[in-house]
Length: 460
Image (cartoon, rainbow, N blue to C red; front, side, top):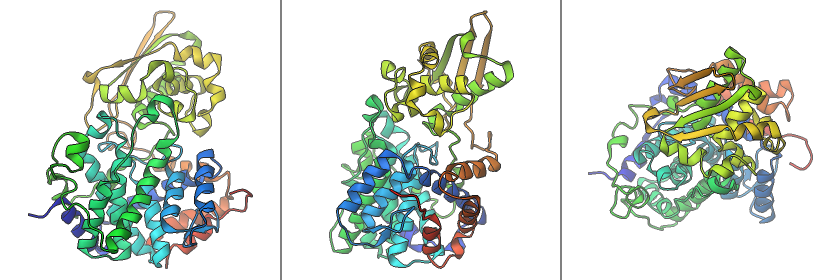
């Protein structure tokens, strides 16, 4: 019987563009637009500048482009930086059922390796769709256990998907890719301790995984071997990280069932587990004209798995000291949504976190762990607002935006794309980028896109 690694390798290397359904190809282009929008919005972010200094000062061989510029570094360091752009503000896409951010490692690896080997747009796009399908299945196989035991699932599974992306573009053999996946297993990492202090490390997880994947594949190409049962083995990924041995169920329909269209867009640059709560608060503000000063208490009921991520430790979540603590604080996002009527990148601001009005409201938010409010595979929100005059409003959103039950308006996706880019690009340049991404498979290679991404601002 084939191992999981062999199943993944066969799917990766055998898939052709003609086998991919039209709806997957079309939806994937929207994901690409969203990905490059959130990436380029982070060009001036402190974390991105820190990564950029490291990868450029190493003096590596110029092979791959650092997005937004004409500067080049070696492949592994380029994917580290470019993935850091994508994931740096937690505004990139999510597969909610798997609790994973698919595009950060997958797209950065595909563009960088594709540039290095001179691949066509169609070849790069094939590799991207392979990566999306592999990363989602690996995340689904974990059944949420990565997060339960303190790991960031994206940091764990991204290296395997990135290795598949790179392997397809390098056109390696099945044995080489299987060995590369085995090597990736010894590099699977991503601790969630950042949730306790709001430090930056999560911004690095997809990029570091992709960086590791490039080295894993290059080592395998040089003859280095990796564990053949890296996923299902007695000391494999799922037994060591999740406490159970994974079966092959999620990998038996590779190439016949497609998970890519399940990947959702984030409409708020904060933890996806909080999005339904934001929607509820915005509805209260709009429908009932609720003002912060009127609120006696806001009660948020959330499943225990998510409670530990966005509600604990309580003191830190109600007094956030970093941008990431704000993004992962249910009290903060609920309070800022009610106070400002929106949660955009501009509401992730320490000045707001220190505002006495918002701080007072955060102290009136009570979070309760309640598995009775679960909706498996989704991020629901249950919220009760009690006003000082005795009125109460209860909201129960069972499905986050982006699901078939609560679809995102595609105009909103396009608006997000434009809003993210308008700081660095003209309207004409944004239109050009959109046209390139919508005809991605028709490009001769990555160069037209990389050239269109270049900006003239100093210091980038």
